Amino acid sequence: MLYYLLYPLHAYVSAFNVFRYITFRTVLSTLTALVISFYLTPRAIRLFQQLKIKADKREDVPDRHESKKGTPTMGGAVILVATIIPTLLWADLKNQYIWIVTLSLVSFGMIGFFDDLRKLKGQNGKGVPGKTKLLLEILFALIISALIYSQSGFLPELTIPFFKNLTPDLGLFYVGLCVLIIAGSSNGVNLTDGLDGLAIGPVITVCSTFLLFAYLVGNIKFAQYLQIVYVKGAGELTILCGAMLGAGLGFLWYNAYPAELFMGDTGSLSLGAALGTMAVIIKQEVLLVIVGGIFVMETLSVIIQVLSFKTRGKRVFRMAPIHHHFELKGWNEEKIVVRFWIVSIMLGLFAISTLKLR
Ligand code: 57M
Image 1 (cartoon, rainbow, N blue to C red):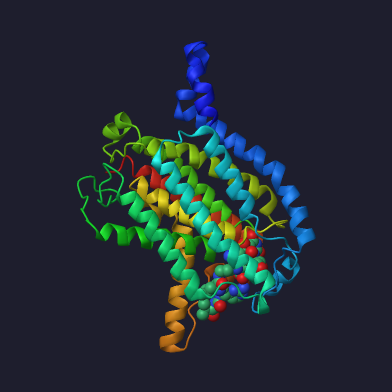
Image 2 (cartoon, rainbow, N blue to C red):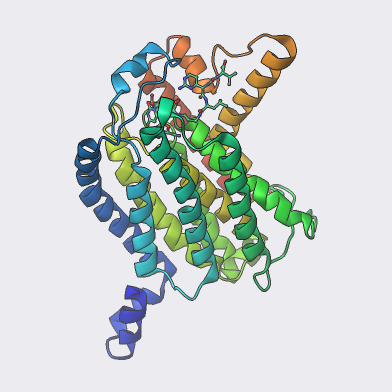
């Protein structure tokens, strides 16, 4: 909205021309998100404490988690506000991709919100039943995928890192793949969100990487120079990535060990879905598996553990998701989290290197 108010003023004062640039608006959206986050989060923590929106200790977690009982949760609601408001202020609202990613943030945020609410109010701390949750996730992912597919000029081709000429056209199957990416990414972040700062760190890494990619794939000159797919209009997502980055950093301030606030499913499901949606729009579907390697590893650890337990009656890890395995091995929480961040940053850098290695 501010973009529409300020940019036209360049007709009178040339300095206002600066609002035309995606880079400048991205800086503004990141800073706005940080300010909103720093203003709202401490207030939300106090409010959630008064309303008793607090995490319960799960019976089967490593003992260290006893101290976490009573930590306010649903901090994802603040992340959503701090991402969406700066986006609405600084992005071009005629851009459809901005609305599609906002839809994925809000719709998956709603699923998470009702899940968190039921966990707080329901019996035995149980949230929305697993099957209902999955069905809703598939439904929303399908709507989002169909919207992306129907954008004029959007090609249902898969981009494979390192192979610039290999772009298989998947036709309608592409929609099915998108559903898998969006719902999978959402659940991947959710499974990772089990230690202070563990999920938001890699979310920040993926977001920063996508910020760069969105800018490049949305700019025809850079796209041609780097021989990557050009997606008209995707550049505007740089501003949304900036907002999500600012909101994520603001949340991390309070979620860093010892956490004063958890994001809840409201945060994990929505952030994961938004990253999956962006991966599809900026045609970096496979790259998400690399840059989001932490989420993939956490998800795979659960799949392997469950399969092994069902087929052989034996566990591969001491406990899945894999961060619990390291906890039970005696690593302390900060060490696990910082090491996972280091891996995530390395994966982000590797993902960026695919721009040249092709
Ligand atoms: C929810 N929730 C955290 C917080 C956060 C299929 C199965 C693998 C599913 C999985 C599962 O339920 N995962 C998703 C994980 C919980 O955090 C809340 O949940 C939100 C995210 N959804 O925002 O509101 C607890 O995690 C800790 N936490 C922090 N800091 C944070 O910043 O310390 C969270 C955020 C919090 C807090 O203690 O209360 C959670 O872990 O419960 N299930 C599991 O993960 C279970 N694994 C399991 O059963 N493994 C089996 C195999 C066969 C799958 C095995 O290995 O044998 C574990 N969950 C728990 N304990 N809680 C088992 C151990």
